[in-house]
Image 1 (cartoon, rainbow, N blue to C red):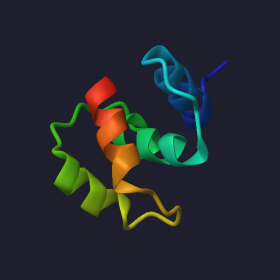
Image 2 (tube, rainbow, N blue to C red; image 1 turned 90 degrees about the horizontal axis):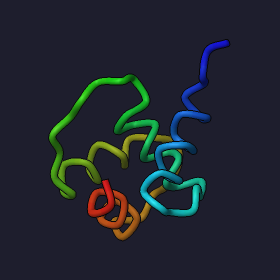
Image 3 (cartoon, rainbow, N blue to C red; image 1 turned 90 degrees about the vertical axis):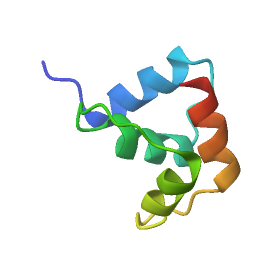
Length: 68
């Protein structure tokens, strides 16, 4: 049985001891959803995430990247 992107994101967020909020799951889908490693800064990740349908705050981007 394959793990969905949603399940993978929830597991990843829980692994860094954060609550899996809607914004954080959106960010993890962008960051690790396709199983590719990325080097990102908070600025370019926030810019990239702003193109998604889900609105995300810059604070959540910074928190997620600090815990990653």
